[in-house]
Amino acid sequence: MDTTKEKVKKFIQFNPLEIKEIREKTLGTECIGGKAKGLVYAKIHLEERKGEYEILKNVVIPESYFLSTEVYEDFLRLNNIDRIIKEEPGNLNLIQQKILEGKFPDYVIGFLEKVVSIMDYPLAIRSSSYLEDSIKYSFAGKYFTTFIPNTGGIDFRLKQITRAIKQIYASTYGKNAVVYREKHNLHDEKMAVIIQQLFGKRRKEGFYPEIAGVGFSQNYRRFTERIRKEDGVVRIVFGLGTRSTGRGYARIFSLTNLSLRPEGNNPWEIAKYSQETFDMLDMDTGELRDYNINDRLDLIPYHRNFNKFASIYSSAENMLKDVPPVLTKLNPGERIVFTFDNFPAFKPRFFRLIEFLFGYLEDLMGIAVDVEWAYEPEDPKFALVQVRPLTSYEEYSKVEIPQDIKRESIILAGDRMLTNGVLKNVKHIVYVDFEEYNKSPDKYDVAREVGRVNEKLQKERYILVGPGRWGSSNPNLGVPVTYNEISNCGMLVELGIKTKNFMPELSYGTHFFADLDLDGILYMPVFDSIETNIINFEFFKSAKRQPTEHPAVWVFEGLYDAYLDGEKMRGVVVSKE
Image (tube, rainbow, N blue to C red; front, side, top):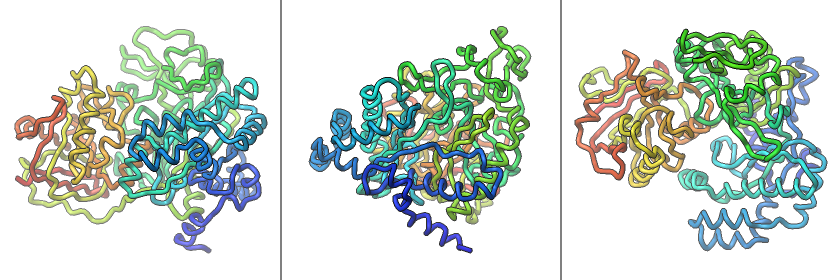
């Protein structure tokens, strides 16, 4: 029996191109990247065990072909982009532009022509770089994934796929990816590509799976002590899984107790923080489209068990109701929300499978795992589309919160889903005022100002505080910063301001949280509606602050400590002055 260390070593040393089937589906003889490595490693072991475990019979790994890093290097050389990278490494816009304008060698076109002919269905084109999805660095969300219908004649299909591959190559030089590599002192990045069958079905003009999401075999962000870290967590959305890794709305299921939810049991709260918008691949235009389900009632007949995923919220009654078998219109004050309340009773086997996969894959790789999946409950096919090590430096070492802290020195205190660690002698707090942010005509300007402050404070680790969900793609949910705009902070605080509908995301599973884990950034949500939480608004209003270029962004200079006890779920930020 291998030890945990030996299992990890086996995974690290595994070379997918030693597998004949993978070698035959790969262009080039060099590396096919970390994402491909994790997927192939899971594939070969799961296929070996299918006869042994009945629960695995409906698990599929979508058909995939691969472009090795050798193809990427040839592409850069052919188009003289390697010279630009060497001479002007900071000119990211130019590098990306030249990549998107580049041409592929004939041998690549020949391979892709064969692939799009064999794979006669929609495709996901995924990054799989040399450094991506390693034991230490996930690069979650830093590189590009896109989808193509793969329809029309061969020339049109080639146009679709070559454009998609160039978009992935260009993402190697995206600002977030470059900052991430610089922060972690990573060099010699090379991009490989996975060409993968897109799992799902066509419904009218759209192609998407009924449900999709991510799963983590360890839950490092518990929203209540009733949840066991070891049981894992699943984040579920309707439609393409693109919605599950961003900071929008999704249903969170802890395997400890499927009935627990971060929002509690109030119907208004549940409806407010439930998914309504979903993603699909438009097969007519080739674009990734998002729709609010309330604007697409015409799609409901394509989902025989729609009421197992969705509910109707009535604002007049403050009540969640079942969706009727036939729904052609909604009453005033009603809307559809994806609560997934009826899903556990409908598909208990799904959760048994997730639990089995968590245990099996974690044991196989010797480390906690992060999986992306898609599911068609009526088939019932379950597709594993990504398997990688769960990169986390979470450690529940003993954190002692000093007993002699005076109430008046506490700036912030929380007791939900916080991380574990201590930050001492911090010189700056960067604060986004929720009132100023709320009335700001351009909330993206606020995010850019946070980025400018982040750059000025690059020599130190500061505490960043703001309303709602940091990094949200929807500025009404929180400040829409990107990774490079908060990369130097040492602690991130999300404020729940009930009257303004700002709500921290009490969940685990987004690319945003993956970055926090990897970078050792402490995290704490604090709510103005929870009695045991503290937001010292008097401090933020009266303490002396430095001038910035935006009225919503305040910078305080002083001396501050943060103590976060992840085991007992208690955290404080205190002023030492």
